[in-house]
Amino acid sequence: AGNRTFTMIKPDAFGAGNSGAILKMIEEAGFKIVAMKATQLTPELAGKFYAVHKERPFYADLCKYMSSGPIIAAILEKENAVEDFRTLIGATNPANAAEGTIRKIFATSIEANAVHGSDSDENAEIEGNFYFSQLERVR
Ligand code: CMP
Image (cartoon, rainbow, N blue to C red; front, side):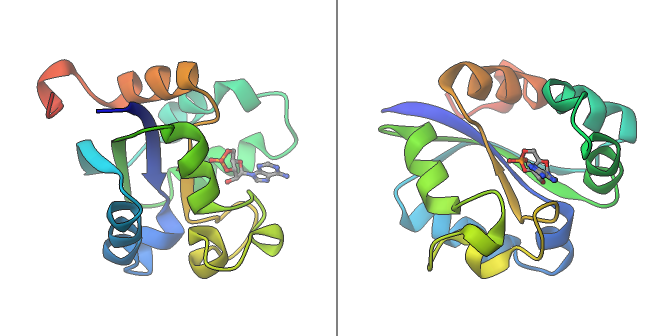
């Protein structure tokens, strides 16, 4: 049981062959996989997913980057999922990420930062629904 968060393993980490190592860290931290798929966004879909950032200076680059290669999207479940997952992945900028966090280990820049993690329960629900139907979930 517990509540849910949503993650993407981004093109940099997927392309470097780090998906398995990242998923192992996620499972070892106690998260259960509720839904998961490999896919590739179009720039338009990346723009829709990150619409909340559309006024930010990095938005155009982010949409291009997030559609540049395959990703893994997943819904994860754990007690206190959103906050605990953000602790596991570390700060957005890997230069500021704590030792042992996924971004510290795998990210290459503030943009190519290995993984996404939802910032609230509400956004976790919206982001999970962006990728997954009810039939694509474990329960
Ligand atoms: P993410 O947690 O997926 O949310 C927004 C993404 O925008 C972020 O991770 C980074 O990949 C990217 N990004 C690029 N530049 C910045 C920035 N200056 N501040 C925040 N996010 C950025």
